[in-house]
Figure: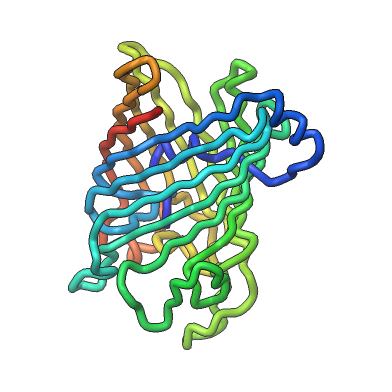
Length: 278
């Protein structure tokens, strides 16, 4: 699965602790949509290559219910109908996520994200039903904690992400019978700073800690692995008072030692993209 350099990381904000205090905040704060559209050369999520080497369109938005609580969505598609190519490698890919964000402090946001990645054509043993969180489903729930210290004057952020429900089950035996929920956990740290010529540079280091459910296909299964070592360089272009167009270039290196799973697409990825922000 999922998910594309710095742009996707900026979507990480989150949880659904909606109490009476939030209802009061809703009255005080002007409600606002933030809408974004990415056009990218391919889709890489945490060192995972989904949908082959085909360009993708990614639409996402965020609605600020109050100054602390927001809801959003994220969608991607590479417009290929076949789920696998003739060699059995990933080809067609689509995904729709729903996101609930709650800012506990000015540097800590809790996020609950619903990942839904139905196959682009019918696959034996795979269910595309939206509310199927079983071992044949295409859906999982991710609980994330984002620490972003940029408001404190330190351009460092840290993400801790754990799958708490859905298709994240350990394999019990060679017959693909799945067992207990694995609670696959991913950690990521990044540094975001401005460079000359109006460039923004964001190096990142991300690792999967426990991948016995093999949720991260292009990662090691029995040990922690650094699947996301990379950097994004971007530059904002102001098209109008309300529309900004960042252009960006991302390099990702997957340092997992499981070479068999990495063979279809390799260990290094170079992506280029443009974002339209409103």
